[in-house]
Each structure stands twice: as structure tokens, then as C-alpha cells.
Image (cartoon, one colour):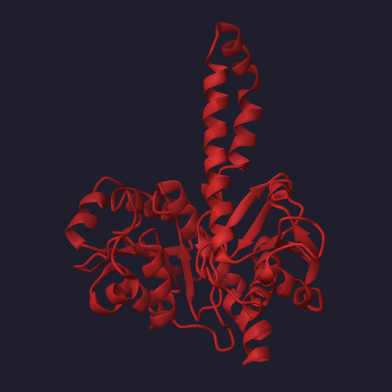
Length: 337
């Protein structure tokens, strides 16, 4: 029997908890036989949702946690004071080796703080970044950082580039991934002080394939495999990307239903269009891993539905099998500790 990858899921985090969280966990377990899920949260509420589904009861376990960290709470204070919250209990399971990974859609700040304070950073890693996959014309690109470090330094961005390269090579399977830094132009002399100072450092790295600057308009074309930036710019790129994608899909659907002729055309192009739109659905790629920690931590959107929860849980199987943390430790931690 193959080894089970154990995932501790914050069942109380997110806009649609516990309903969509539980459904996503059940879907993940029912789609693969190498996953065990611990649903961490208020036991009564979680079990009430579980009763709606059929699943292998040996591979879904409910772990009671009486408290919930709300979105508006100060993250550091909440992590320290709410010891019986679903986030803290689930992350302690990762720290203690009871689970291989954490998945949560709750407070981003609490997940970031909990990841560093409870799970802990790999020695030598200065700042753990959040790194989601963005759908592109050529597949997907890794955006690193998208929300963890809004005041990053050049040395942080260099580590982001290295961690992103390791991730794309071993998780996504891209050999010698192309690395670019987000800028307002292609020329080396352009950019703010952070970009200008980081550019030559990346250029001097012999263990990454640095191709220079990337403008935001070139991201959807798949110009680079790893897109490096500090979290303020990264979060704007991510949210705009998601917003434009959702609006475009809505407008296409509306346009196709606008007349009898367009409805006939819609029937003809529906299979190809459905496939294309699915490729640009960010929920298909799961959540954003918080790289550089001693354990696996994946943050999903606060408005995640079951599909993204399911895919985020399944992501953890690849992370575990490819030993991403061990590779980051070997590539960054030991070199720079």
C-alpha cells in the first residue's frame, strides 16, 4: 500500500467554511487513494457537513478546535492568544509530524505568522514568500511573492528567485526555468530602487536562468516561468489577473447569449471555449505555497470553493513526493546559513 500524504485542513477558514472546505476535502479523498485529510475545526459543525457525503471514513478524520481566528483580527495576537484555534491546532500537527502539510483559506496574516512562528523557517531563509501559479498561454508561471513581504530587500528577492526555480523545476517539471523580475520596462536601468539594486544580483546568480525584466502585460503570454517581485506589486498583479479573468469569462458568456444567432454559434464553439477558459481558471492550480518553511503550508483564497480546496490538498501530494522543502534547504538554507 502506498504511503498516505496527511493534510491538516483548516475547516473553519474562508468565506464558505465549513461547507465548501468539507466538500473539497471529500472530493480530494474520493479522487485519490494516497491522501488522508484531518479536518480541523468545530467538531459538531464539521461532522454535520460530512454527513452529506460518502467517503472512506478511514481517510478523513475530524480534529476538534473550539476557536476560530477571524479575518479582521491582528494576526500575531490571534496566533499567540487563540491556542485552540483551527489554524494553530492544524499547524502544530505539521510541526509535530502528525501531518505532512497544512491547507487553509482563512486569514492570510494568521497563516503567514503561524507558518513562521509555529512551523518555523528553514535556517538561512530570510523571508518565506507566497507563490501562486498563474495560468498563461504556455501553461503556468509562478508569481513570487504575492502577499507575504511588502517591504522586501534585494537579498529577499534573490532567494525568491532561487526558491521559485526549485519549485518550477521539481513540482511543475520545467527544466532550467526562466526567471524575470517585474519592472516598468525591459531596460536594466528602469525601475524603482529595489528593482535597480536587485537586477545585478540576479544577473550574477549562476544557479538560476535569469532573463531580465518582465512587464505585467507579458505575464499572460508565458514570457517567464518564475516572476519575481515584492508582495505589494505581486498582490496587485494577482488580484488584477483574477479580476480581469473573471470579468472576461462573464462578458464572453453574456455575449454568446445575446441573440439567437450567437446562441447557435455558442453551441458550436462551446467545447473548445470551455477547454480554453478552464486553462485560465486560477482555481484549477490550487493554492499558494508558503515556501521556505520546515513544513508544507498552502494558503488558498478566502473565497475558495470546493474545487480550489480539492486542488490545494492534491498539490500537497506533489510537494511531499518531490521533497520541495528538502531541496530548498539544500539549495538555499545550507549555502546561506
